[in-house]
Image 1 (tube, rainbow, N blue to C red):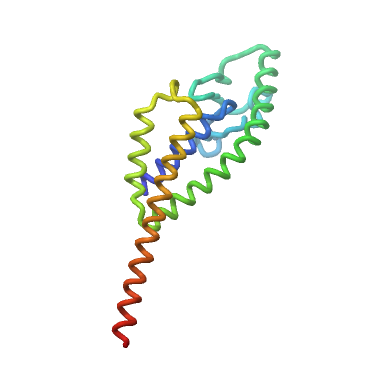
Image 2 (cartoon, rainbow, N blue to C red; image 1 turned 90 degrees about the vertical axis):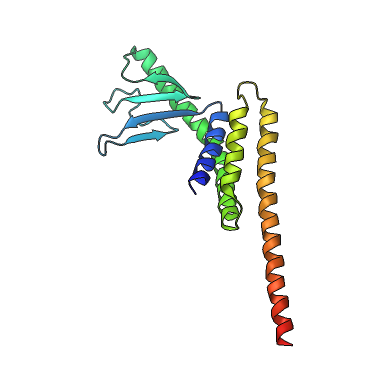
Length: 179
């Protein structure tokens, strides 16, 4: 199950990192002391109101830190761009999230049907580690992901067929014993 969660995380991270507008806003909640992360800026981001320090990451790179003072014009520009990008990004990501939810559900169903999710997760991790993201063409990346998903679905289908054959064998054996 741990590897299933890792696999789902890899899939989600890939979808988010492939989104050119993907940004991550990170801050510590003053109430709980826990680190908070969001794809949208918090309400106080680069505003004149005081709030927790916000780190902004884009595609894994730190692009802003609210502890660094900027001019009012820069502050307003950063704030405007952040909220505009968050609006566009949330629209684009809503489709990705629906697809990811379906994929996660398919993975859960496959795991419940007896597919070795650990083996699939290892295969995906090996494939990801051997591929260099900078040189991987987006079309090739999509083909590779589709191939991995196809393999998972094929394994799940085969498992269902095997289960049905087993059930038919059991039922066939019972009917002969009754005659």
